[in-house]
Every structure is written in C-alpha cells, then in structure tokens.
Image (cartoon, rainbow, N blue to C red; front, top):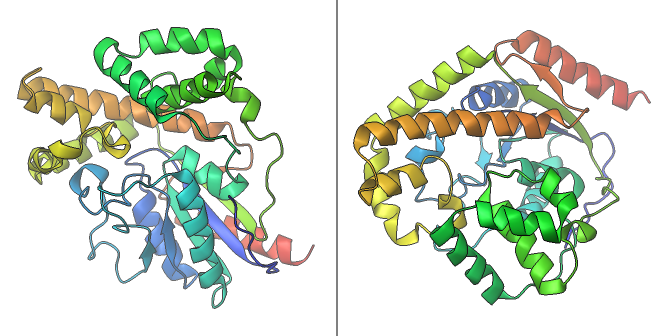
Length: 313
C-alpha cells in the first residue's frame, strides 16, 4: 500500500539510473556534495548486509562521508520486496525533505525505481504452493516451459516481460494461476503523482567502454573474494536476491557444473547481457535525460535548470 507524503512544494528527487558498472556511485557522491544532501539506494541487492562483493556495494571509504540509505539495511534472512522498499524509501525521502530540498535516489533495479516514482500495482494475494511448484519446475526444466505457459495465459505481458528474468516470469504465472485472470489485468493503468518533483538522469557509455568496465569490475570482484562470499551464502541460494548475475554462476561453479575459467566467462558475459537489459528498460522512459557519467558540468547544469524551471512555473 502506497503511503502518502505531505504536500511539500519545490522538493526534488534527482533520480540517477543506468546499467551496472556505468559509474552511478561516483557521480551520485559528487552530486550529493554539490547539493548538500543524502543518497537513497534503489539497488535490490545492496539492501542485504551479507551481499557486499557481488553487489559492488560502495565501502564506507568510497561513500566519502555522504549518508547512504538502504545499504546494509536488512539481512538476507529477511524478506524484502518492492512494496516494502516503496514504503521505506518514501519515508526516508520525507525525513530528508524536512531539512533539504533535494534527495538523490540511484540504482539499476528498474522495478524498484518504477515503484518509487509511480507506485506499485495492486496485485491480489496468491497461493504460495503455486509459486513453490513453479520455482521447482524452473529449477528442473529451465525457463522455456514457463515462458510457453505465460505466452498462453497472458500473451500481453509475455510480450512486455524480461524473458530472461525467471522471477518476473514466475511472478506473472503465480498471479495468473492463483486468480484465473491474466497478470496484465492487474497492472496499474494510472500512475501515482508524487508530492515532489522528479529530475531523471540516465548514465550511459559506448558499448566497448561499458563492457570493458564490466569485465574489469568482475575481475576485481573475484580478486576481492567473490567465490568465498558465495560459499557463505550457499544456505540462502534460493533467495530471490541471489537468483541473479554474479552469484548464480558462482553457485554452479561450486556445484561442479563447470570449471573456474568457464565461471569467469559466464560472469562477464551475463553481466554484459544484464547491462543491456537495464538499458532497454530505462530507455522506455522518455523523461530520462541521458549523459556520459563524466559530463559532470553538463549534468549539474541540467539539474539546476530543471529546479529553476519548476520553481518559476
């Protein structure tokens, strides 16, 4: 359930989005200093204390004294989802707005960003047994049979969903099977208008530059102990947050599915594919204004122009 915020005039959330490894963290720290404010993380895996290396979570030193909210805020043993994030992030924004005019929110998790901006669809309760059965089917037979089933039950959503994302596919199927209605029929038609202004910044690089950064980040993660971190997380490997690039490949390596070299190849390949899916998601929002991450002067000028235009309307 969406919680209302008080109507606060001339308050702004600067939203910084983009693919993995593009440079969001460094830019947002600079922006937080520029506008003397705080950062809310919308990364669906950095919430969890036990997931540090594989999520590229910024260290205390890297945060440079800037307050970061919703990093290390939960344990992997806790359930945390988009609806809870919406409630928490709005409450944090409200608190920051009591002393600041600008809040920075950043991440690469499209659903969490969309939920903060527009609210979450009102989806009815579902039968947990159905989700369990679908998850078991996915583990045994892979994603293709579930996609075929979704094509039949909800062809509209089947065309919109990220067909490489098992969580989204399983979620759509569990709602369709539990209710007897297509998942798409429950998706919100009207966006919620938030009581603050949104300034949307997208970060991108040319493909070769981005892919080189992704490969370098993965090498650094492995050097910093990604495999050891994944070993400690093995008891929780069915957790949604761990059913993602950066961990599933290591889990399969630890299970003996393939050797170390193949694990590294898949980590890099799947991270590049993930970045492409992120760009596809965010490119659908016409309100996002795109920049190279190093175009700092232009980014600040754009943000200030949006703030001034809004205040003088």
